[in-house]
Image 1 (cartoon, rainbow, N blue to C red):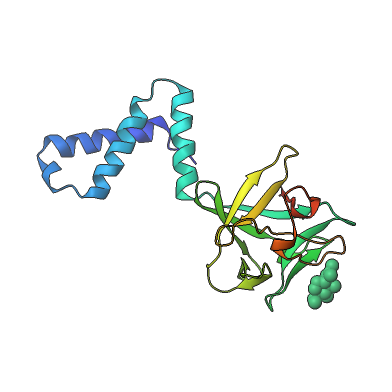
Image 2: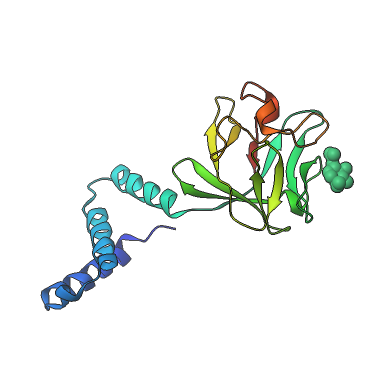
Length: 187
Ligand SMILES: *[C@@H]1O[C@H](CO)[C@@H](O)[C@H](O)[C@H]1NC(C)=O
């Protein structure tokens, strides 16, 4: 949600009055940052400019998406993380296939199964497993067909993949040319 301009101007004038009354000397680094952000946003001359700044900030501070990752192989499967840490596909939507996709860096996300409370993780052999620790990040790349690929950041060239029977495929046995690595984020 974006701050309305009226809220922004109130905050800016509050900051300004603090500045003028001499309390500015005590401002922390965080306050300086906030000041800079609000100031530059209030200066944005047109809606495009404002939107760019806002989007960039939202992205970097981590707007989470709640999605299912659909892979169009076999009868079609959603990636699911079962409570015991097993990862495979499920044709029908269920709680275990509901994933929180959180950006941690530009184009890099974590995948967290809301119901099993486990993160999608990949080991050095390319096997997927559910982890209680937030230990694995994935590079999310948008393909021309609107599907995404998820490449392990720790193990480059290894991708999240499901076989046509709905089993997890090892990340080092696949390439992005294969549909098994293509996932459509669905609401
Ligand atoms: C996924 O794993 C569960 C638990 O082992 C199993 O019951 C289910 O059939 C598997 N799904 C597929 C598509 O293999």
